[in-house]
Length: 263
Image 1 (spheres, helix red, strand yellow):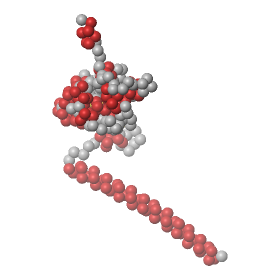
Image 2: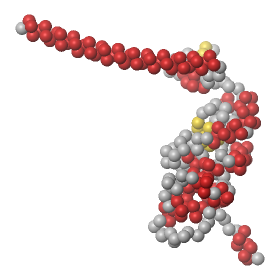
Image 3: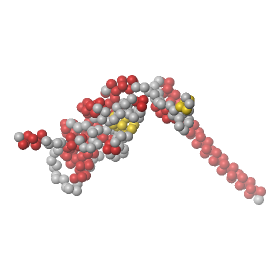
Image 4: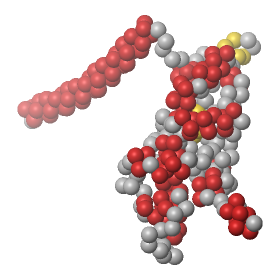
């Protein structure tokens, strides 16, 4: 009986990591996924103490005993390795299913924007390389990014969720797209005595154009044309400025020559 109780009370490294304070964004990666070398391709060159960290994650005894000085480094490498494995696991069928359970329970929070009507957020990283930026929250309704409300999530690396997860998540679960269509695509406009403030005003909705996405072919062609014209105008202005400087220098030289001739 005592042996059975001790085996039941044993907690794996993965379950312990996911139960830590501020780690409720993570899901438990299946051991068979971690044991498959194909899923870990390229990680050995990124994570120091790779073999020791992998053994720690899988609760294996290390081939060589870890020194007391190296133990904190191996622990940090294990957390880094698990986070990078986690970003790959949540793109699989099992990982997406585990994340959708958290999504339905609003464990990632809701969008603070009024017109999004409490749309559930999704964790995302703007970079796939670790150590660049912490995790952000993506709203599928307004397409904007937000910082987590609690500071306990501000030390989570964004690479542990990656750049692909939200887009794949929305495409796999069509119910989310239906929820987006049911919400109003509005933006609140400030008014003074009933009149809307112009967009060019310092307090106007100058950023409104950022939320307008071209939908038709004509709008896409207009966008490309505007981009091309703006680039050309900027190039012509810089050339004109250079030409003016050159002409000014020539005029100064000519005036100097005239003065010398008079002397």
